[in-house]
Image (cartoon, rainbow, N blue to C red; front, side):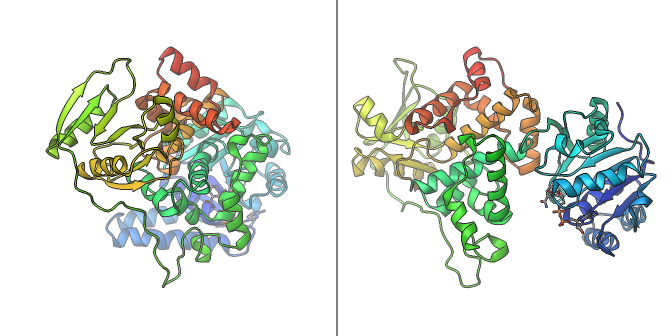
Amino acid sequence: MASLGQDKIVAVIGAGTMGAGVAQVAAAAGHPVLLFDVAEGAALKGIQGIAVGLDKLVVKGKMPAQERDALVARLTPASTLSELAPAALVIEAIVEKLEVKQSLFKQLEAIVAQDTIIASNTSSLSITAIGSALQHPERLVGMHFFNPAPIMKLVEVISGLATDKAIAHTVLDTANAWGKQAVHARSTPGFIVNRVARPFYAEGLRVLQEGGADVATIDALMRESGGFRMGPFELMDLIGHDVNYAVTCSVHAAYYYDPRFTPSLIQKELVDAGFLGRKTGRGFYDYSANAHKLEPQTAPTLTPSFESVTLIGDAPFAPTLVDLLTKAGISIEREASEDGAELILLAGDAIMSLTDGRTATQIAEEEGERDIVLFDLALDYAKATRIGIAAADQATPQALQDATAFWQALGKQVSILNDIAGLCVMRTVCMLANEGADAVNQQVCNAQAVDIAMQGGVNYPKGPLAWAQSLGVGRVVNVLDQLATGYGEDRYRTSPLLLRHALSGRALV
Ligand code: NAI
């Protein structure tokens, strides 16, 4: 099925943040666009707002003036709903209330043609439920853009129970023709992005709640080690805690209180206090003019007490570490591991390995080695500028100092965490991959869609499933198993799909 022809009229209902953005996207793709809003003058104001935004692009030399003029000329304000009659596709972006959307669509069906496609930009309502009010629910699809719509690449195309497959395809192709990356999902709570992203916030909040690290340190680790554009706390402050907490609560309730989505009391406190983030001047961070800036905890620089390190066994990132050690002028001894166990690094007194979901304290007890120091996952150990480490409770201060000096010698800033299972980046990435795999397992979407959605909708540096793949699915399953055992919580249960891929070795994506 082909995309909608450029000559077809697109109507957008609701000229707020999202509606105006979607109207701009459709007009930029060459469609004549009708914009309607129930508030008087809002549609015209929306178009004027688009023009002002485009003017800036012209001034910066990013858009020719002619292109701006042609785009704006394709936008027409409508003053009544009946003016939308000639539209081939209507995209609704009004208030997020089921009854209001249903009532609008009932009116709309009496106006538009039989074959007009109706789309909703809802971010949380069920397309199936919205469709139940329509005479022809087969022509209703979700068309979930991300804010700001002209910039964010992703569009989630959502099918309700009654949605016609061919119509979903047309909308998918149309969004792609508009320069977006469209993915298809079944109408399920949170669709793809708002579901799979939950652990990004939740694991940060867990680490904070358990005193693993402070807000600024967790954010710094997720950025500088994990490669994410923003850490969970700065991102929640930007989104607004009222909004972010409400999404978590609604997904939690919609999945019949699955503990995987349990909201955080820490975030509830912020909402209760009215500390909603940037928009109120205070959230996890204080945004007032004279506020004390929170800095990540960074270990003071130490001089290594060792001249060589020993690498026992292997890991996918071992060559990177060898490279960094060579550049730092530290001599390396390599030993094969006797039992094919994980890569172990010996530097001075420190016995170091990548976190596997157990605490360092537990490993020290199980291995009968007190000087265990674990390090966190990095997206790329060559590019990471900070590494989180944690020592076993049994370890000597010298072991922690040696581990600190080791990473500093490799050019990293070091944040010393409390000994929390799975540290910070590792537990988050494993839980993101788990949620992504579970969405695939439950037939919400395919594996490629998960990775495209998380990169295009929330700018993740790597798709969670591709990340699991490169880490080794078996490793991810092991971390999750260790977290599940350590916490005794169903929250960390492994998705059956991850387990299958770990067992068969078949590629996830
Ligand atoms: P908004 O509050 O900025 O704009 C909503 C507009 O709809 C207002 O101009 C309002 O006057 C108009 N409106 C309300 N009821 C109407 C009706 N019955 N008929 C015509 N116009 C009506 O809201 P926003 O943020 O643009 O959200 C719109 C929709 O997009 C919601 O469903 C929301 O969940 C969804 N969404 C929002 C995102 C965001 O980041 N703001 C992201 C993705 C989806």
